Every structure is written in structure tokens, then in C-alpha cells.
Amino acid sequence: MRLDKFLAESSIGRRKIVRTYIKEGMVKVNGEVITEPAIEIKESSDIIEYLDKVVAYTGKVYYMFNKPAGCITARKDTVNKTVFDFFDNVNMNGVFHVGRLDKDTEGLLLLTNDGEFEHQLMYPQKHVEKTYFFWALGSLEEEDRKQLEQGIYIGKGEILTKPAKIEVQKCGMYKDFKHEIPIDTLYNIDSKHYNQPVVSGYLTISEGRKHQVKRMLKAVGCYVVYLKRVSIGELMLDESLEKGQYRFLTEMEIQKLLGECDQVKINIRNILTI
Image 1 (tube, one colour):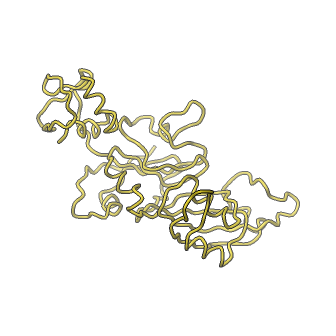
Image 2: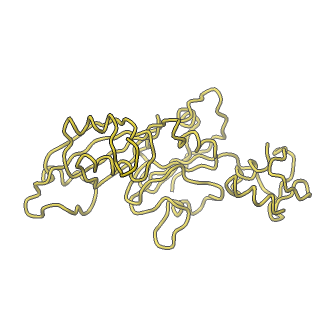
Image 3: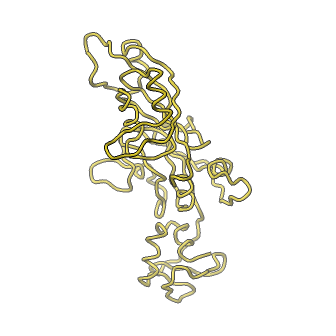
């Protein structure tokens, strides 16, 4: 195994960061300072030290996290709570989020220390689908749905979005569904009549542009007030996880995500929640 890969999979840091550590002479192999990240080591017998402390090989980790609204997808922030703040008792060095969710968006977020796994899911040419459940002010007529399904312009200078899938669940007036919309306060609602139309449904996309779901729905006259990612590829959010809870992905779940059932080799961990 390459030295930089060993360190990245041992929660020392992301691959790019540990290469810097190695080049700066912070890493020893069997007592000798090594400055070449690509050197091959034997993880089962060689003694690897970082800053003079022996590094234990932990292997690749893959977390499913049910992100609550109100926290940001980042490692640190001086103002807001981050998704990493929910992993207080876990060594998250070298672990990073796969893609991101907006501060007010809930649902499925993956975290890992496996760069190839991230690449397979996030690389645009892989066309991995992501499905979101939404509530929005407005309505979705047949023509609106066709535009979303065929591709739509969502910003000046941007190309057409890739074809999406839209499934409308409920539509009507806010007064009829206000108890079903899972947020405390809705702005832009007529407080006297509650006669604004609302619509809920699922939107599936295969891209990852900034605020894409919100912008796509806005382009057809809908203002998103609640958004939750429910799936990535064939992986569904485990609804038994409360908001803010996490667990390790199972081997089968990882295989489904990567589509390489006969090639994926991982370490299986026990389910873990907070």
C-alpha cells in the first residue's frame, strides 16, 4: 500500500494533506524519515510514525448521516454548528463529507475517508442520481413538469440542466396542508386567508450545482420552503436514524452505490448512532 494512502485511511488527514506531511519530514517508516508519498509499505508489518507517534491502520470508513436543518456542511465554523459537531466522540481526522447540503436542507449526507468513493459518486460523468423531497409555495402544472424533465435554464450564463425526474405528491392550498409541512414558520403566507397554493413531491437530479433543486423549482414558479435529500443512487436514507444521528454503511450499501459488487473490498463496522 502507498504510504499516503495508508495515512489517509488511518485518519491522519486527506490524501492531499498527508502528502504534505510526508514531504515535510513528519513521517517515519521503521524509524527512518520518508519524504516520498508514493513509497510502498506493508501495513501489517511496517511501523509507521507521524510526529513520532505510531499510527494504527484503521482502514476506510463510510458514514450515513441524517443531517438536520440549521447546521452547515463544513468541518469548522465560528458561528454555525457543523455536521462534524455531531461526531464528538469519533476520530474524524481524514474524514470528509461527500458533496454537501445547504444549511436549511435535511437528510442523507455521506462522510468517508475514501477519495475514490467520493470521486465515483460526485464526478459529473458518473450521472449518480440524487432524490429530494420538497414542499414549495406554488404549483406544478404539466408544462412545468415537462420543463424540469427535459432540462431548464436556472441562471444567467449557465447551460441547460440535465433531464430530471419529477413526481408530484400533493397540491392544493396552504391552509389544507399547513400541519403536514415540517417547519415551524412559513414566510410569504397570507396570515388571514392561507390561500397560497403549495405543492410537494420528489425531484431527482444527476448534477450538483449550487442550490440546484431550489433554483430549478424557482424557474417554474415554485418557492421551496422545505427540502430533504432522501437518496443517492440506490442508497435510501435510513429513516430509523433520527436527525443528527449516523451509522456506518453496510457492505451491501457501499456495493450498491459503486455498482461493483464483485470488486469492492471494505471493512465492515457495527452500526453506530449518537
